[in-house]
Length: 94
Image (cartoon, rainbow, N blue to C red; front, side):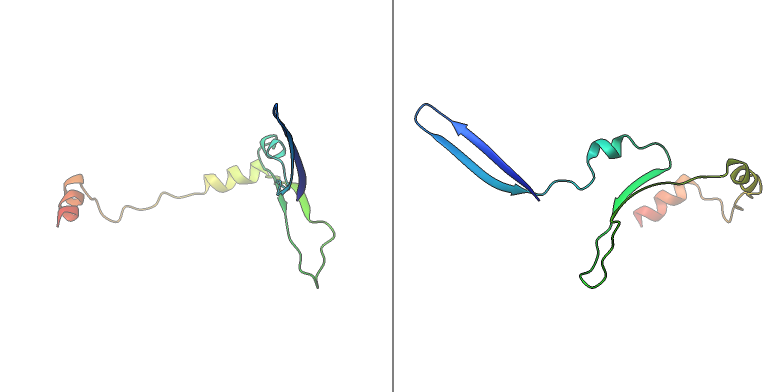
């Protein structure tokens, strides 16, 4: 919660407004600056289970060679049945 104060002045009087506003825990500028594979977050704790480090910034590190090897072992999904556009429309209009 952030305390906010605004002052409004006109020719007759001045008014001051005090309020509290909930701000983002992680600013949009931080999120926008993330590179591919990076992520940020915030976790909450329970009163009986305190967490010291609530905010995190991490990166997923992929092994490109192993991923490519795995992708090369992929097999095509076999065709179970050929369906025409007309069959789909006939089924839809039933």
